[in-house]
Length: 255
Image: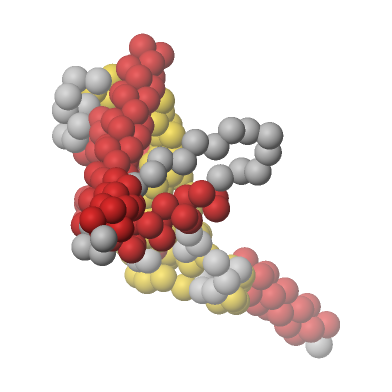
């Protein structure tokens, strides 16, 4: 009787040990890739699941979005300007089995691929486009990385250029170019304003010249707008007024 009880206790203990050694718990943001005798048999998790001890091996893989900083790269642009560019890559694992089996280290592989792709894409455009059209470059980087990492079970959601550092001499040149561009725009705006003012003055003169009374009204408005003070005001007398007065005097003299 005691022997049977001992055997039962041993069996129960072995069963509990088996359950404990085979139990695995993964959080919501991880998945477990199961290799059974070296062969991939599937993906488990999250939560509680069991594997076969000494037969199965479980490798946890995170499925959260990973923010990968692409270190600064010295790049020669299409117009032969040396710049230093860094970027940030946002990606996540969508197929844990491929991420573990298809590539040795998907983090390192994605980092190296992002660096080479950044150098290749930026090296094919001119400096002005790098500075003014980052959205197009970001879209091109994301498209290339997403296509090449698809076989690794990775989805690239976004790639953003962070900083573009220029040599000091090139910064001075760009500063002078921007200043010249501002001067050019200012002169163009002033010329357009002068042209519009001249056109309006020409139109006003054309309207006023059609009626002599309009000239006199404008003359009186100008006098009204003059500032008050101890000053001498010299008023020009219209020639039409003088000629009218002379004609009136001549008629009276004839009569």
